[in-house]
Image (tube, rainbow, N blue to C red; front, side):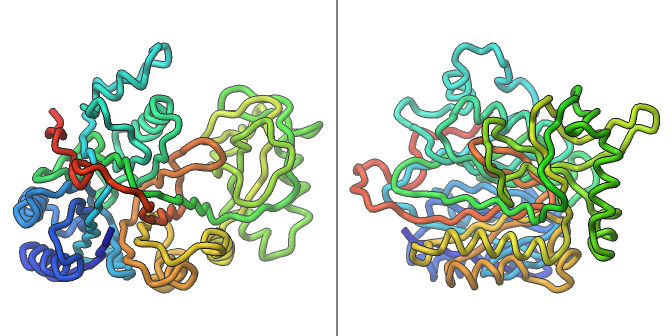
Length: 413
């Protein structure tokens, strides 16, 4: 298994693609089985030509990716500038199945007695293909990313599911999804993996706790009416009064709530919370409105986010992942448009931290409009988050036919 990650800021998309393709051939010493393609919206007028050129360079490869307001290659982050990035790999012992999911008419029935069979048919998975991991890129404006993640997790509960929502345009249809030789404006694209490859997926939500964990004693839908024996307004006032001046400023402008994703958990720790936005407090009822459903007897934690908290959280998670492991074969970085220079004040923060903690592995990725990764035992769509996929090959004897792109994979309808 060999990986390559490169980036070009050439003004012309053809020049960028040709340079990246040549770099990939030199680095890999072979034609790649997989190419992950990321491009800034400055190339929007040439989306189709761009991806067709990549497909022409590597016609036997599975090509999957999306547009991004920032792209990452060779461990460099480029934000709000013209750029194209490629991450490529030769994957002996690994089977791939690339796919597209249309924005409508996909299996999404809670009462489906066999969602696995429904989704296998929809994705046109070969009968002997058992997906161990899936990299997913939905578009941002269909409002279906969360439903899609829930449906795929229900269908493949043992599968590692991760990815990012395409970014780069403030209007529906303005982002691009790349699949083989096509650029698609809607739906989702992805690639499933099976065989001799593993993904250790880290989700860093970049928050720290203020105040104690609190028990929701009265709630309905997305509104909390009571925290313990207090009204939410009183609980928030108590926490605010206990903070220093700097944290009070963060409390006023950068307050979030963490929801316990595993209700049976007794002990709670930093980083385990599912971080969600607070929409406000109802002036009449005093209810706290969230951007998430909440149930009575769930535990919540108020959180604040700033650059220091975001760095500390990512560093801690990367240190834990690298404690007893060698340098990985590759690193895929899927980070939020709300991070980067806007949060940290200087470029390349998350990429540099990954290299510092994990070693100099090929590193590429994209800035997203939502990041997909696991918290606890479930997978969610996050915001303001960095998802790091640490990729390693597994020592296994591949079957003769189990190499590279699945020969039975057909372009999705």
